[in-house]
Each structure stands twice: as structure tokens, then as C-alpha cells.
Image (cartoon, rainbow, N blue to C red):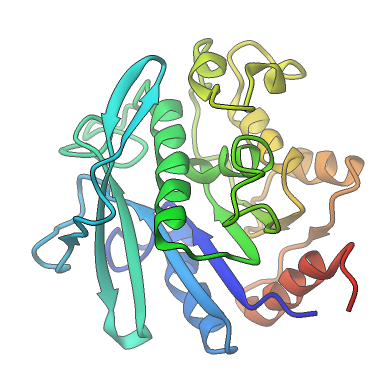
Length: 273
């Protein structure tokens, strides 16, 4: 049984942000999967260093306008879109004045990590899921890339588990290298709470939740885990295996076919042909 609809939730895509291991995969993987006759949707944050005019981003009014409450504070959700013509690929951007406008990616201009990165990740995750609901699109597999997507698996399996768009979806999480030094912070548990998502999911981790523990949280609620970098944290991969979660080891540069097969493996598990 093949997974026909793949939702990519990533944090970096070229050419919108500089070249990196993550942004190269964010650019190449969705196109390669689309060329295998799968239907795709792709999301990333609207980082403040993205040039909207040069990249021809425009707001999608019908998708914007919702407020997301995080730690008892309202944050307006803005949705923008652009196209990568060479790949025949559309990219949706999650934007918000507080979390993204005039701000860089994980760190500021001086290389200092933003102290509210955990809140930014929570807003991004919920923003993507709310937008997919509005699109009335039902993915078979949701592939999450990078720390900005790390709370998506938790929300899919708890707060959004009964939503028609997600109740049958399988979640795959890609593990890269260590991207953040600062922990999520002691208020992470309060911020993460939404519907059935409760801060008790963090009980097995340290009070501040380290970056490694954030990745373990993502793996815990995923149906499959991929080592998408040679630098992928082995502790996270071992944790997934201990939980009985399928793990795909690092595939090098020629990864698209292996990923597509892994999607099918995860999707067909527990389903009848």
C-alpha cells in the first residue's frame, strides 16, 4: 500500500534561506517525491531574513486571520505562499509579527539563540496543522524536518488525533545534528499544553528539556524516524528503537527512493492491503 499524499513540515528550504543540510533537503526531497507521482504540500517558517519581494511571497487572505493562544497570549497567524517554478512546487509560509518578523532563524544577528525558540516552534507546528485543516487536505504521511517541527508529532497524536485531516496520518521525523544549545526552558510544558496535549508528556525529561530531549519527544510520538544526517544524534535513534519505532539509517545523497519506500512501510503498517 502506497502513501499517496505527503506533507512536508520543514524549517529551511532553498532558495529562501542560505544553503545548509536542511535547506538542501527541504528543496530537493519534496520535488523528488512529487516526481514519483505523489501529491505533496510543503511548509516552512517565514523567517525574517527571507526577502518577500525577491521571492514573490504573497499573503493568502482566506487562510490567514486565526489567533493561536500560547501561554495565555494571542498570536495572529499569517499565511503566505510562493512557488519554486523549476520544481513546480508551491511553498506555504507560517508568519507572525512577534515570532518571525524582523527576526532571523534560530539566532539573532550576533549569533545568540532566541530565548523563545520553543514558543516559536509551538506556534509554527500549530499554524501548519490549522492551515492544513483549512485546505481540507488529508495527508497519508507527515514528514517533519528540524527542531521547528519537533512538536508536530505530539500534536498529531494528541490534540489533533480526531481531526479528519490527521486521524489516519502517519508521522515521520528526521533527526539531523545538534542545532540548538539552549534548552526549551522551564515554561515549555505550560506553552505546549493544548487540548489533549498535556505537559505530563515531558515528565520523563529534565525540567528545562534539552535539545536532545526535544528530539526524543518528537521520536516518541512518531511512526518512523530517519537519520537525515551523518551527524544525527545516536541517542535519539537508539531511543526510537527502544520504543519499537522503525528507524531508517543515513542514506547519503541518494535518499529519495529510500525515503519513499519508508513512507510506504510506515503507512502500510497495521493496514490491510
